[in-house]
Amino acid sequence: EVVKKVLLILLNVLSFYKMFESETEAGTKSENVLDKWILSRLESLKKEITDGYNKYDLNRATKPIVGFIDELSTWYLRRSRERFKSDNKKEAVQTLKYVLLELSKIMAPVMPFIADYIYQELGGKLESVHLEDWPDAKGKFTDKKLEEKMEKVREICSLALQKRAEAGIKVRQPLQQLTVNKKQLTGELLELIKDEVNVKEVIIDEKLKEGVILDTVITDKLKEEGIVRDFVREIQSKRKEMGLTPKDKIRVYYSENEEIVGKYADQIKKQVIAEEIVFSAEKPLTIDKV
Image (tube, rainbow, N blue to C red):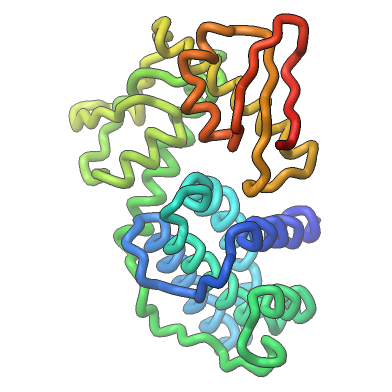
């Protein structure tokens, strides 16, 4: 259970980082809301674990690591994926490196081998993570208000996705709008909700009594976008099966929805890193490495 819920997830995060690391140094200067949030969560983790050790409470000194790794993978990394693939990936890569390095130090007393492996893979400055000082737990990046707001964002997304499931609408199908009652959520936080729930806009209605209202009407344009998303997902799945990396370019052959795919061809090529998309009525969806 620990291997499945902790170690494999953490090693997947490390593998993702390694795809984009280049020569980037660890950093904490990003103004992105997700970077600020994960740095704040890291500070909270340091404090909680340090307090646990100081009070000889081993449960408190170890258990929070599991929850943090889950948040790092299922929220921070998943919501940051497109940033890592973009031309403006530097701050995301710097932040993730810093978080993983600090996490390796926090984990070191109870997960000595995996902690040292991560530290070495990240190019730690010392011979071993076990020669590092214990991380400072003074909370220099702590932002409790942001942590609370992000918790609200995740609650809203959970409610909205539940309504999608009840309506039988898959997440890849874009919808027009979601109405929420949390006026304190603005800017980047609303963008996170839009991306996670896959809606065009988020409306704030302070008079709304229930958590969220999801508009489930699918227009022709929304249906087209849903077809494109499915198409992209299938290609990405085939890329993964072939063991391709973001550096590998492909050629795509397809046999359905010629008009729609042609209409969104430029967008699709950018998303799946393809040089060409070729319609072939007799050839099912396949990809070749260029």
